[in-house]
Length: 319
Image (cartoon, rainbow, N blue to C red; front, side):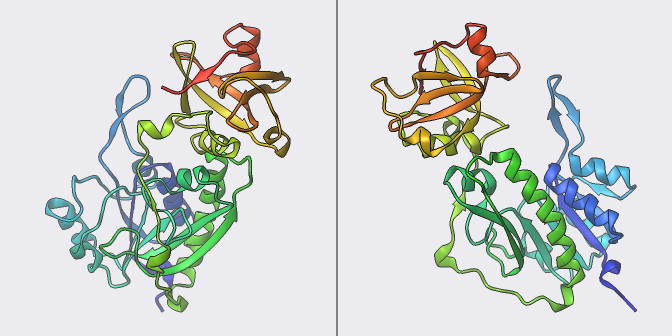
C-alpha cells in the first residue's frame, strides 16, 4: 500500500526558510528525491562563494542537489524529468515555474507562502504585512499556476502579529507554522478540499528597495514604528544623524507615547529612558532601543548616549 510518505518529492527552495521546511520533511521521513536551489552566491564579509542554505541541507542528507540557471528548460528541466517526481513543493525558491514544470508531477506543484493569501502575494510578504500594521498573518499552501501566487489554496493557518513584534519575531513564528502546516498538508493530501482565491481581495508585497528602508519621523507614530520593526533585525531602516547614515532597530510602541506633545521638530531625541531614546514623530513619539553607525556593530541607544554618539535634542533626518 502506498502512503503519502512514499510520494517522490522534489523540493525547491533557497534561503533559510526553505531550508528549514526541507529539513522538517526529511526528519519526518518524507521521500525527498531531489532538491533544486538557486546558484551559490557570495556571502559574508569575505564575499566568498557560499552554498545556499537549502543546498547545505541537501548535502547533509545526501540528497541530489541541482542548481541550474533555469528549471523550466535545458539541463534543469532534464534533471527534473529524470527524477520523475510525484509532487513538487517549493518554499522561498525565488524562481517562477512555467507550464511544462507545473504539469509534470501527477500530484501537482505546491508553494508554501508566508501570508494569508490572496493578501501579500509576491516577494516580501512578511515585511509588508508588518509595515502596513496588519494584526495577523499566516502560512498558505496553494497549488501553483502560471499567475503569481494565485492558485487554489489547500491549507491556510494564521498567527497574530503583536504590536511590538518585529520582522525577526514574526519570521520565527511563521517558520514554526510553516513546518507544522506542510506536514499536515502532506499527511492529509488525499482529503484536501481546494479553495479558490478571491481576486478582488488580492494585494502584492513588492520587492524591498533602498527607498523602502528610509524612515521619516514626520509621520504618524504608529507608521514610524511599523516601518522600523518591519526591517528589524535585518536589514534595518536608515536615517541621517549629524551627516552620518545610521540604522535603527528596537522600536517600541505604547499608547502613552502617542500622547506626547512637544514643540521640537520630528526626528528629535526629546527624552532618554533607561532602555532607549524617545524620538519625536509628527504626533507623539516612539522609543528606539538600538542603533548602528557606519562600519560599526549594533549597540544600544543608551550606550550611544553614554559614548556621546547621540545626545538629547539631537535629530534624525530623512535623506
